[in-house]
Image 1 (cartoon, one colour):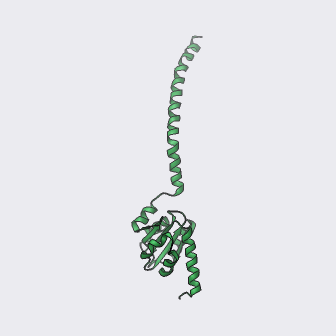
Image 2 (tube, one colour):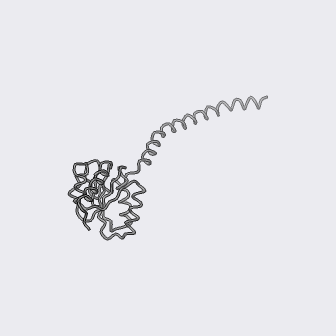
Image 3 (cartoon, rainbow, N blue to C red):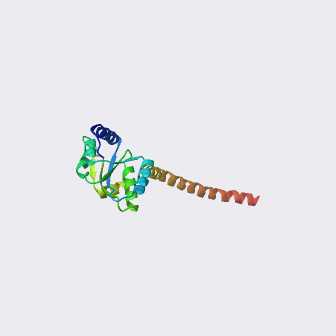
Length: 175
């Protein structure tokens, strides 16, 4: 069933709003995926802050026109599902993880920071750790020199303490 003009305008404005807030767009071909599998993908996407939409390609092209995602307009062919996310890697992670378990979902490409990505680029983007993991790694790196210094100072204090404890023990034994 085709959409009338006002419905098309509503879809375009909704997708334009998504594109305005998003950092990443991932496109994947969904031909042959069951409804149950697609529902599972959507639930996973929603829980990770990713907006998945099945759109007509002409409407998607119009919606991203003038935005940073316009560079992917030539890749918008065939039956595609579009994933927009505000988190830089969330859309790529959700789609790539699902594609590992379901071979019918084929990653076609995407856009990050105004740069078009091919399927391998999307997979590389998906392999980047999450923001929380990166922050934890950074904290570990910052704490590493401090903890090493504390260990060395503790060892020096223990060594000096052993040398001072021996004469005190001798005095106690002599008395």
